Length: 163
Image 1 (cartoon, rainbow, N blue to C red):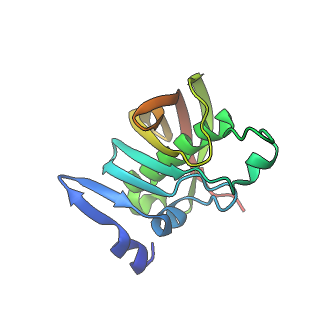
Image 2: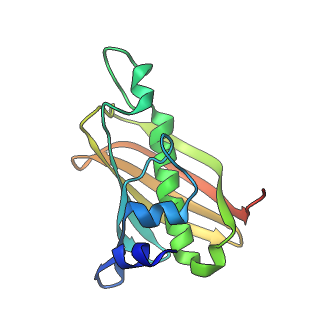
């Protein structure tokens, strides 16, 4: 992790941390147009956190989903929750996460309750259910203005990065 990214991770009290975009990009390999988390707040080390995604009309998927009525695809909302979880896993593992990737394994009980549209700010509340060895399981809720728009349970596996 770069010194700048370390300096930008601000303690906000009682074990909680905010992780900015620079540090997120140090932690997970996703990049535009597939990086779907702008910031992670309220991080409780090894337990939970809230990803922030500012949804803009400039997102490339809005060109085809749907012209004239832009709606963020539900699968990308779940991916944003998974990316938030990936950041939490890397944060929990610290230096032992170097050279590792977090791979999505399972999505269960996904529910989409309301459309997410340009101008919305997604709050991706992710909580670890458990981890056993290299497998981590999470519960996620995506909210806009404190209203749940999507939810899912999902699992990821930590593995060595193959080149």
